[in-house]
Image (tube, rainbow, N blue to C red; front, side):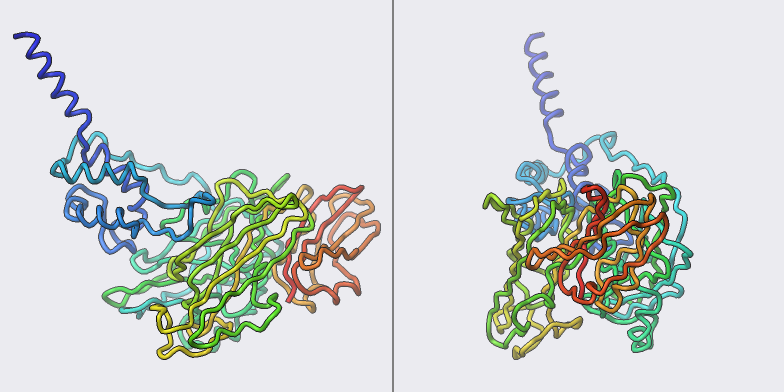
Length: 495
């Protein structure tokens, strides 16, 4: 009799320990994949942070995870992995199914999530929208750019950055770019509201496009280790916010927080450069009506490179992306595959580890556009011919590559990622130690090499002056060299 009781107790204990419950099994899955959007006063249509909330939507959660509608992540993770990829594993799907099949048991709340500690970073500067923007997109999405001036007597190296949405119920994403103060004045005057409307980008080519980005569900956007951003003097911040639809008029006043590194040494400056761009296509970018189009481009790397992330940009006609590199030994490396492009889920794809590509590697990028009535996202009915531009009835073929640029001596201090021929002569750099230096521009289009300067530079700030600068146009990496050692690199597009 005693043995029988022991067997019954053992079986019951095993049932308790193996039973799937909300607090022990389901809550951790949702915390990892869902609650960054699905919480009170956030963009998810319903909160999923308590047992009662999740139990009410249990069947729906099973359906959207089984069909991979949620969590949303449109890049193919079979070929390359990203820090910010989101997916529910087959094992987690089985766990959710088992929980529902067994009557959605609550379980012991001792297994509930521990509170997350707040950030210990102390920020030096807070830059906020100067007034509240009234969101009127009750039934549709809005895209508004807010120019925010910042007074700096000299450039700053940023060691930590944070975007804080003023109203998380409507702020879907934010892309931060930098431009010379006053650059956006014409665009700002055109729109009578606070800020100005721009659909896919800031409406003009800024010096530091896609400098930083934020999405509520994206991991890995914080600066880590020795990664840094550079904020030049006389800049204005262009805060491009995507507002989602809501059932009533809302207002927003968002902010960004910056922490400075006053003594930067042996750092990597992140430079997000649009090396895939309609400006570099051999043919005119025209998407004729009632046709599907394949747009491709390529460029080569004249020096070794580390790519931290990739950010594609296209609008509503685009249906897919593929970006890959072919190494000198003819092996290939996938960087991005998207089979079902969706502009509303556009984001930066951050590699789990920076992709190291040797000199001589060639990067290829292709996007497919469907300008037919079969494309449910086509904004024109009937279809009409579309060209490049920043509006909904325009298209784009742009892809940003975020390079890790070593700054051993913090030499270049004013390094735009995008510039014009006319602006090249105003670019400054800093020399920490007097000596003989060489400045070389390597073309990514034809692998040509142009020596910009070869001379003795004294310690201090210098301006690049060379008649050869006016001949540069296209995609380049500029190197500062001393005694055959590359001290600094600078990735640049010149329009």
